[in-house]
Image (cartoon, rainbow, N blue to C red; front, side):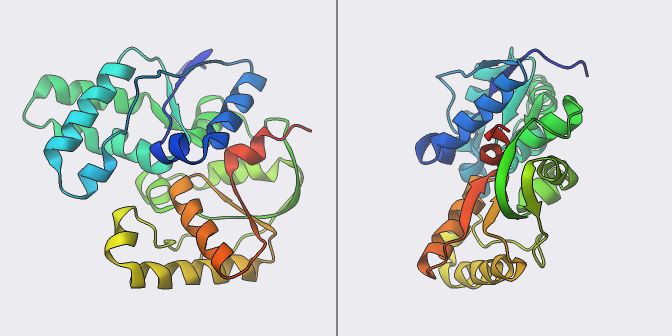
Length: 244
């Protein structure tokens, strides 16, 4: 596809409500690249929590609203692999009974990109003139890696951040145990999983852990805090926003 000059932002709920600095960092990166940014104020949840909990009707209503809000957008960019995976791979299934809406859902999914995917695969960039002083490791979130097959894109960008030393953690692709409602329904299992993730982060020797999904990073940040670690947690957009 042609490189767009304007993108429409799809902001994950948890970023909108808890971590707005991540969205602000993404905007700074895009503006540095001289890309115009549009952010519809009427956007809401993409419906993933309802979908994952089996509430198809509620998920369908959220998907309809999403398609109304973003229907005319040329390119949609989101700082969350899990939300992009929902739109790209599950919206079509929600409208199997309506071929017209199914085609529309598939079309909008093809125009929706995760942030690092957009930078590397659409804009053909591997660096954005960023600087971050620190030893950084990366967590592969499940929907990003398994749903969207995005693994190398964030690593390419991290490798080209000035003064950043990148180190792989052991078992970087292991789930952190968040999984949205999973962490609420199965707290003991979730805690065991995030404890394993935290141990792997510590073993890497990094002073910062990053990733592309704030749900995972919030879970990891919470556990690091509870065990008294001073390892910093940053969304990759925040690292890329630091100018050199």
